[in-house]
Length: 466
Image 1 (cartoon, helix red, strand yellow):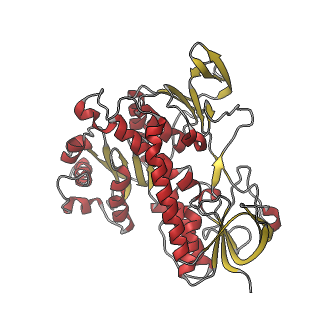
Image 2: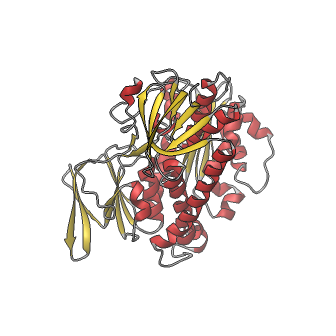
Image 3: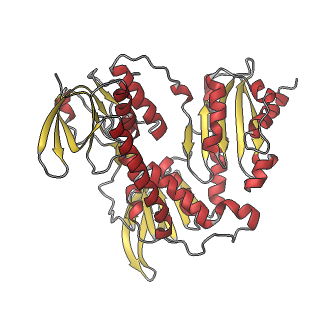
């Protein structure tokens, strides 16, 4: 008999849910985590810290209430990194405790070790406390190791002036100027957070269109807000090199662009993507091979080329969200033990915690146009909604996209306060095959942002001309 029915490598959202699901099925389960704390990147350096940092920044800076009280309004005049990280550390510790407790009370063994394959069913564990090594065998294995920030070997990182997103929690000082190199989700979120704090941000990205999977109108609105916060956008630009230099203002970073431009800034955040954390797994021994970015290819059941080895979460690439990773982990565990599942991956919601926030579910206008699907839109602006006025958000909007003939809802796209919460109403209607008429016939609480759905539905139906 093998040691475990399921061995999960990685304790982030994907691994956590896979382990608990298998345990609920009465299986012998262990989670291998190479850090001394559980939760993976999500809890320790990624999603939880960044979203908590965003909340602290918006509260302390008074950003949310400036439409009501003026541009000079702030809760604290001189905000420090210590102010911002005070709340972050509390939330991280609580989430680690909650995650560990959930694993323990479900009977999941937690093994603090570096895992590496010896063969497709055998994994060697090198314990992080130096107590030795052990070999364990498992009938099924889930690789949920997540991803690490991609490093450019030519960049002189020092963790303070030129740093990665994982280094951000170690910053000693809030900069006056910041360059963000890379306009992906992570780079864009941090660019917005620092801009809201009054930092002069320069965003550099090699593509002219940021986040092409997001509805173009929503993305254009976000770029407008960033520029309104005095951010400079250098889109369609590539970085030739970075160097650290001293001048009369102290230690600075000089960024040279291929176009000949030079940017001088106090600090630079280098965010050019993430690489699957598979380098130390000895995948060849298991009969597996990762791509150039360390990612593993899987089928619709999250099986790798070796059927009893699954891969879930950031290590398999897009969308690389905590929410989707959790669902992937659950579904992989169910498939491993022959338990039927039902999910709607085409209706996974996206929540991008920029300032203001963005959320979406379903198709964009650009995707539907390319597919040749006839559609109409309906739009509601927060400034038309009483709750929007109460919250001080006069710039947010919600867009409904529905089929021109069947009137079925095809997409919901939101920018503004509570976007990531509000999107779930549209997600539920779409999952049940609802039409735009549902929103017209439904009574929403007043005053709430949910009323945006009704206003947008009327706006869309009125465009039909009947």
